[in-house]
Image (cartoon, rainbow, N blue to C red; front, side, top):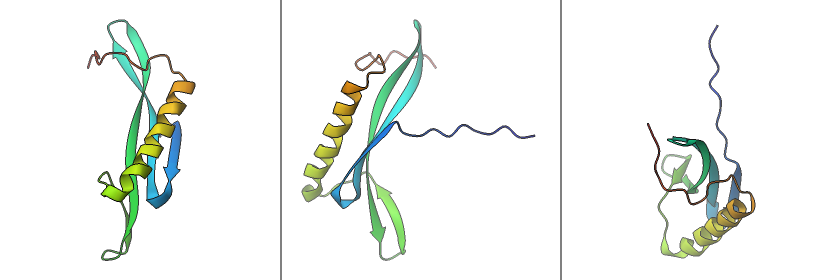
Length: 96
């Protein structure tokens, strides 16, 4: 019998034009005062590469994509602020 690994999924995703999106993750940290949940945001861009004929993901943006990136990040920010997990601005004091 093999143990199944739990699949971690984002708690929210905010897509805007051009394949750009912001993904909200909820991370659990252990501190000297116990465990806490703290959100993080990952920005990414999906694009189709004609040369390899495959979809790829990037975290690099052209100048004209920055407004779309900002919109996605603002949406993620507002989602986090309206769905509190209890620890938005906790200092990075975690134990390994």
